[in-house]
Length: 144
Image 1 (tube, rainbow, N blue to C red):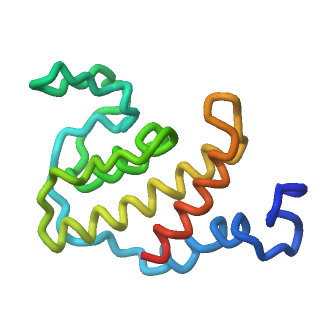
Image 2: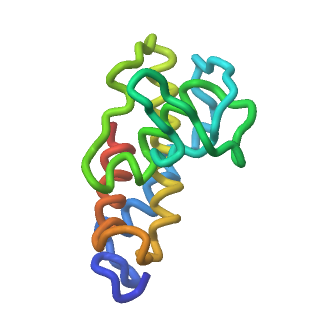
Image 3: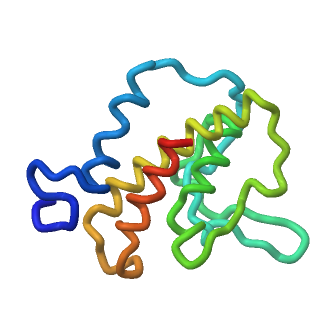
């Protein structure tokens, strides 16, 4: 990451902090309580969800399998397609109890970290600045 703002050797900028911050968060090693088993798509790309005005249909199952509702909601909420062109609040119409809300929060942190590493190449698929926006998302997720 040398040459990137805040990413050079010994730098303590936001990129460095976002890459180092998970060390403290993952130290506990305990999965949060409140997991509700579910069959999950495993790919929260909004392009995989087709809405006909009445129903939502899922069209991509290559990453599907046993999961839990909180993980799938977090994966959908943190997928780059849900925020790159304007934030989509995918949790607005979902009721969560306290335990499941805590699990969603933990899973969102995990998904935000995954996207940090996936977007670090700043490739042509996403608008310029997407990686920098993800750095900020990770820092906010880890502070919550």
